[in-house]
Image 1 (cartoon, one colour):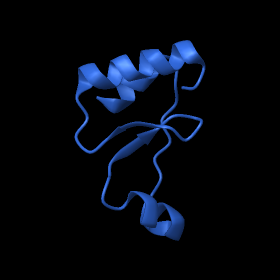
Image 2 (tube, one colour):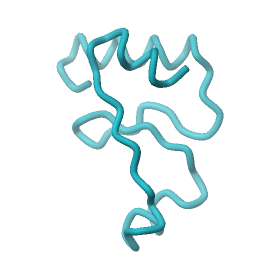
Image 3 (cartoon, one colour):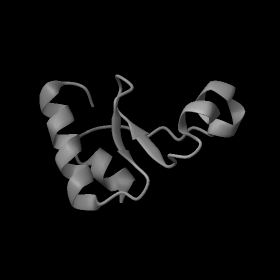
Amino acid sequence: MVLSAVQSIGGVVREVDIDTDDHLTKEFAVRIPVLLGRDGQVVAEGVFEERHLRRELRRLRRSGNS
């Protein structure tokens, strides 16, 4: 669902294993999964609801931050 939603706005998904980076583990360990925009802004975290995710992705695309 996340991949198709991101691709629908022309975005790219890059999966990151936070266990390989102490900073990411500290910041996101209790919030995974976390979807970040290019600018590092949290788009969604925890359980993603598709309708909410698609709305946020459209908003980010309009603002140029996806």
